[in-house]
Image (cartoon, rainbow, N blue to C red; front, side, top):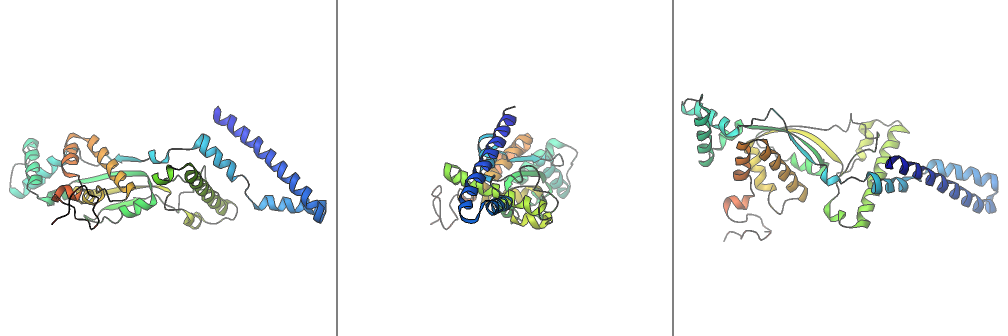
Length: 297
């Protein structure tokens, strides 16, 4: 109900603004070029400019302004085993010629493999998940982790029509979110890009795949990802480092939380195997240390 009232008020304000602008501009131009010519010129200007962007920005801020940084979501797909340690023990049991019909023994064998550093068995545990609500920038970095030959599919910028509804969602860096002025300018910029993409598609009949080349790195995207446990552990070494990019740290934190809640075996893995490299080796390996761990002498 509040949304409908606010939209009605916005429409009325828009109408009043248009009337005032037309009246003032026509009066000024009439003194110079004549009334009829002035009216014609103002009409052409109004058609060529989008004078409502600012009003839509207010609508975003006061009514539909979402906390975009809280829209992130990790969904662990059911194809992911709930018993990764037991699975590792079963696969190792084949190698050792052991009885793999007993899951209790498989679990113990899996733990032994982990504690002994037998990483190969970790490659039998695949994690399939949907990563949603993160920036295209951080997903592009996510693609750089190619260990274990992961498979990924990202939301298409060719088939998804971003001219519908409010357009694309986007991520706001925390450094910008702290400032009201910077945050408002960020919203205005993203709103303008949304309008421009919609204009290219609707007004000029530009194909979606071409219009969406305007999408910024901040736009919120989605992907479905499949990778093995060994790859995820390697990723944790780099991305849980306090010097890693802030959004990637949060992305991996969210992945860890989702896996921790998925099953007890995953909780053990996350709590014991997912950590920064310095926690693994006992010292900082970075050229520029954050100071949490001392450098190796």
